[in-house]
Image 1 (tube, rainbow, N blue to C red):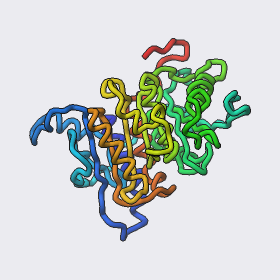
Image 2 (image 1 turned 90 degrees about the horizontal axis):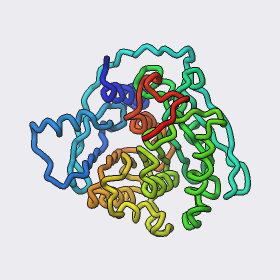
Image 3 (image 1 turned 60 degrees about the vertical axis):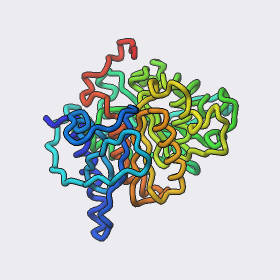
Image 4 (image 1 turned 45 degrees about the vertical axis):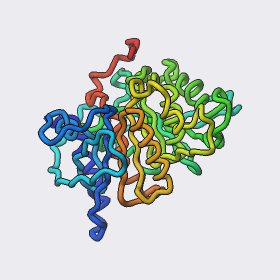
Length: 356
């Protein structure tokens, strides 16, 4: 039996390797990986078992290789580049479900904020209805100029199916709403903002049992993330409501330093007192040449100064573009699902009230 974290690393390797195999002349560069633990003491030197364990259990980079992350405690950007190591092929875990792939559901929820129906799509893992279990779920937000199908077009369904079938990604639900104009408005009153729609209209609708979606309706079973503008909202919402989400991710996140009020601006929210104890797991990634890199660095430095644990991945190649996000889908999904059971039998029953 392959340990879960090792299996996730292998899955990322297998998913991303074909992308680099077709580019034999691609530079053999590796991402800079920054793991800040939120501890103010100096980092231990070689031989410390905790540091070795942390490196072995951390996430991996892209570019076709499993990357052993370097544990860095309160060290300014950038950190040294880790050395890639070849990874052997995993042994596939037998998949007991009769369905070989998940399904995509198109649905909508009425919003009093927008005055109409807001469409969303959902990825339901294989045997979602047969298992009668409460599944963890991730709300995935799109970027400017896209809609609820952005993540589908990047290949998230195929990546999920492959990971679940191989036994390296947990069976989880993905919820991808359309932000439309509302997601572009940073300065709305909170109750009438994109946050208001997601927290007060979409999530309650998803978690009402009558809708037919049996979900893990507690902090431990929820995560939120987004690309570009979606990353802004994911962090704004998760940092304002750390009690609602176990993890938050920003992929090329647009942390606009000027076009948002302090109450909802992630860069300001990252300075709030007590965040180091209440924050969800945090992931941020960007390409080194992306125009959002200065915002990413500012966010990382702010979190670091506040002793808030987070993970930052700076990839040496790519841009603010679909090919970059598609190349790293496996990493994103592995991050969100890191703490969730690989076996759906370990999930709470639909008949059970969920606490936690």
